[in-house]
Length: 111
Image (cartoon, rainbow, N blue to C red; front, side):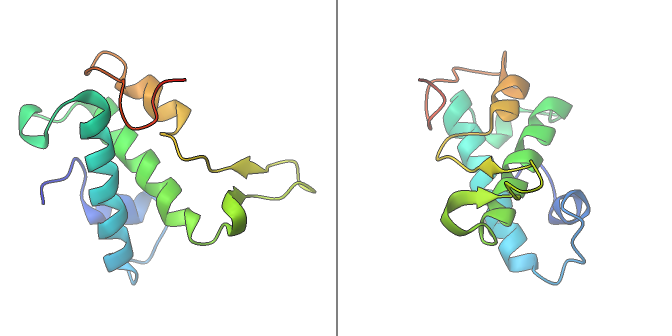
C-alpha cells in the first residue's frame, strides 16, 4: 500500500529502533487511510506529498503506535501533569495540518 511517509521516517519520529517494523507499518498504513478518509483523497493525488500531510500521517501513526502501551486509552501520567486521553478521533493537530487539503468531514473529524 502506498503511504505518505516511510516506515523509516515513522521509526525515527517515534524514536524506535525499527525492531517493531510490522507494527509501525500497520500504524502508518492506518494513518494514511485515515487521512485519505478525512480529506476525501488518495495517496496518488499528492505528488509531491505536502509536508503538512506527511507530518499529519506521522503524528496520527505515532498516536496509534503508542496506543498499545496506553491502558484504557490514557497516555502519560496524571501525577506528572501530562495525561492525554487518546480519543477515537483524529488528533486535533492532525486536523489543523490537513486544513485546506480536502473535506475534513469524515473519520471523526466533526463534532
